[in-house]
Length: 198
Image (tube, rainbow, N blue to C red):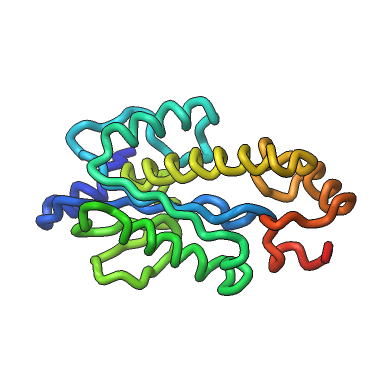
């Protein structure tokens, strides 16, 4: 499969800086939603870039380093649980993606986003369902976002060791649910996702 199909079409239409955007962490009970926006050089492709969920943690970390080294521009954003509770996860994801794009040191000519997201930006955009598997730029963004969020959740695991955040990264695993029942909610739990335990 040609992961540069969408980028090539845009280049043929005169675009130079094509930005891929993806989010990680829409579903967990705890922790932020994290988005990455990245503009990659398209003449020096990193082999193995794919939907981050298809890769092992070790492979993701290795690829993330390479992506960050080669990126023309990259910006990572997080939206915290309190904001997610306030504006809902869909709006929080949109805000996170917008902030990631606006934080780039180079303004993109075009933005490719994963999923079915229309963003409140002035730059031309296109959303692609399963974009992290279809587009090299979105795949690169998905890897950076996933590695960054996993690292954050490991740091939270040291602060709140009972919840197993280092392995469940905030998702509702058996150990996580048992810990909520026993110890209650932490400040990083999303209140709008955990109403039955309040």
